[in-house]
Length: 546
Image (cartoon, rainbow, N blue to C red; front, top):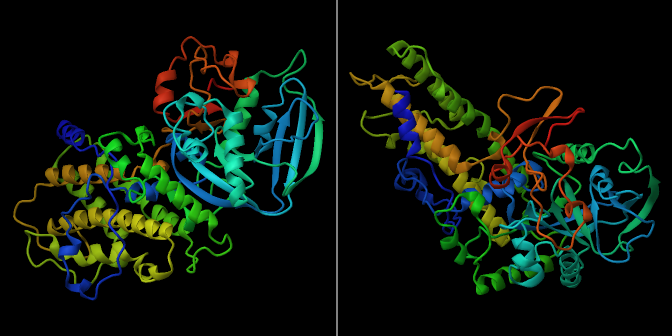
């Protein structure tokens, strides 16, 4: 049975590829009788983007998922609230007179002090208007992390300018002047802001000459500083993420919005999600996206939407409601028994059925009962109630929505709809097999529980691969108290002998990687670079190689 299951799973890996979202429509009056619209056997179009928009919106300003998928696909306006501290490390005591980078955590900025450490702390005296690029948008890497910045700054992707950070910050700040932008939010080891003017909207709270971590006979090695900034970045791994930037999702611009960038549909088709990028985007699509971005930046910052929907919380509720439960169902299904007799199969099948019934409890209508044992369409009303539970009211308010809100609504509907379709179908099959303790139904004379469990395993694995939520990516087994779970992030990718290409940028990244990483056995550079995988590293000295 195990070999059969593995073979089936190998054929059911779903690739996250896309076509335009279906439009979000108000629920029709005939919904209660329209079972064709709630077909439990209708799988998502393989090119749909709703689940991708949902997941990227669910991941905004969170370090873990944006490390996992470096190539950002969202640009979101936001504010840095009054009274927020920002940090800038340098080797002299001059306050910058040109655009420069500031960190949200001092562990990050101190890393740039070098031998002479002057550490500037600023406080915001009014809300700063910023634009956030998601993904690992400060990672100076080829392959797409900076695509969205290139498009905003230069109207095209310039791979040869990956390390031309001085030109990038100056051109972005110049472009942002027409919208009164104060800066741009990016992420590498931790979050940073490209601050355009150090004399506007901020004031100095301190400018200290600190004892340099890089000077002296017994100075700690650079790996100590690196570990500490990575630990600081990990504080923002998951929801709510970096809370010192407040995003306005009602003005989100997504490159997964295929009404803006239809040319990317073909480019992404057949690719793994980690390969998705903006390279090859048609010039007309770039122009329409930039026009959309100009429109949202021109809208009122105070109240761009009349509905004031808390989209981040809505999305989080759905992730919270289903993530652990789906993971538990997968665990039960993948459990191995020392024996495979009928009793073991029945126990496992009934356990899965109980969890499915729990997930669908708020939506299991008393009128939804099976008329026969050959069809699951009788469960369509349960599927419908589960799917629209969080959006039915919101969908009726669309007359006041921004384009971004309609996009988010469609993403929520598509994502919750597929979750509900899969678990409702599994639950209905369990009812017909006589496994449900609440809705008793005489099973057929012969029930092939082995085949049912295999089918369920394929269904839940395919669903979770389609959703691709980063909360399921973790260190297993869990790390000890002296460790933390680390997802390899730029510029730490294992092999110390790899240099980044030459070019402008902080001296820190021009040199060899720290000698602490010079372990001949630690040669997983390519694997960490291509597909970062979580691993436990020490948070106490001696630190583990990153």
